[in-house]
Structures are given as structure tokens and as C-alpha cells.
Length: 198
Image (cartoon, rainbow, N blue to C red; front, side):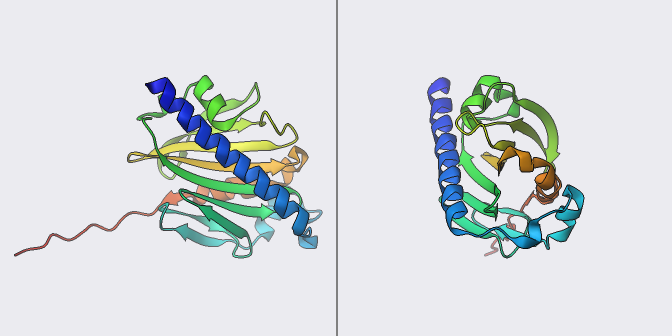
């Protein structure tokens, strides 16, 4: 039963990645490159982007973003196109899974989830005040891209915070911006429902 559930989760994540890459390919074909994003080193580039807090009430998350970035949403998933050329995206996905602890995400399960090529690295980090797994990888089907993905649990929900950079040679320029966004990520606390007294 557990293997079947993981396979279903893997199919969901595979569809999310396919959705991301199709949207990026489309955006790449219709959005011009921005002249103000050229010739800056990573630190200077990250500081040059005006960021403000954006939130998604359905997913219950908040993070830094730029109001000019394009946002696309589907059930349980939002994708933000940080740049069309190079193709840089951020995706937040929420799903209910049978995963109760991050220790269940072994190398085989992570490979299936993220469709990672062999040789990816995993480290335990803190994200949104919770323990998370950070994966640095290259996708199996898109070797020209680089991925930085975070996996964490919030209550019974499994969250993925996924970053994609294509081509991977642009990593040095975007890594500080990506880290800044990831560091700002947190969960919106649901307000307590007051007790009704009769």
C-alpha cells in the first residue's frame, strides 16, 4: 500500500514538473528578456530586485516576491515566473500524503518525487521554522536546468517549494535571490475560532 501511495505522489510531482517546464517554455517564447537583469553579480542582482511579501491564503503561505512576476495557479499549486530568459521559476505545492516524517523521504522516494538525475545532494535545513529537506539536483529530462527544492511538513500537509533555473549556467546569478525568497517563506497561522458561549 505504501509503495502505491508513493507512486501516486511521484506521479503528482512529475505532473507538477511537466506543468512547470511547459509554462516556462511558453513564457520563454512570448516574454522579452529584461535589460535591467543583465550584467550584475549574484549579490548585486538579488539586492536590485524590489521584493515585497506575497501570500496565498489557499496554500496558507507567505514569501517575498516581486509584484511584476507572473503568477499561475492550479489546485494546490502556484507557480511564479521570476524570469522568462533565462527561465527561472518558483513553485509552491501542497498535498495531503501518507508521509508523516521527513525520514520517509529516502533517496529512492526523492528521485521519484523530483525526477532527479543521479548524484543529487540532500541536506537537512530549517525552513519556515520547521525541519525541511533541501535538494540540489539536475532533472532527468532537462539536464540543462538546475533545481533547488525544499520539502517540509506542516500539520498533515506535505509542502514542496521548488526552484528551477534554465540554463544551469545562470545559477550563480540567481542563487542569492532564490535563497532570499526561501528564507522569507513561512506559513500563515490560521486564526483561532472563538468559542461560542450560550
